[in-house]
Image (tube, rainbow, N blue to C red; front, side):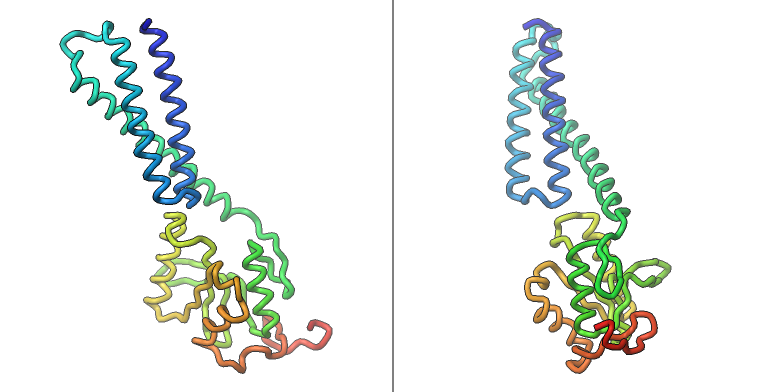
Length: 241
């Protein structure tokens, strides 16, 4: 095979393989690819890449110096190429995932709740409206500083000195998200803060599951109380019910 044609084919193959790596690594970082599927993909793509490299080297071996034209050289350089390709693609995917996470965090809140709180997702709106319906006075995203770390709990219930966090991602779905969650939970625990963690599973039966979690810190009598102002706690009249 002509050397120039081989170089063109090899370059195109590398670009295509790199794009596939970035796509899969990005989906893995965001939790869209399971661990098993991810492992199978890596095994297949590495094996296919090495075989392709070996085949290409074999076809152009006449243009390679005789002193290095050996099976160990061909195999070694093929493995190095695949490892370097995967490493570079993984770094690019990590940068892309961080950019997407920041974009999600910077997205303006746009769900207005019954008590005029403006939240960031439908799930948060569901929880906020449920707290309002239960007559539980709550603050949305108050500022809190622990050990010099400024964090924003999703809700704070002053009546029981309780902090409520909604974790929208499943565990290990997103490494950066999991790291932030672990950090916040450690801060709450270190300072003996009362924390109620809510997940998507709890929302399947919010009247039972979320209430049960809150009852670890609140009394049954705290539920179903008259609605109160979220700022001053004063009881609102029937016009606001």
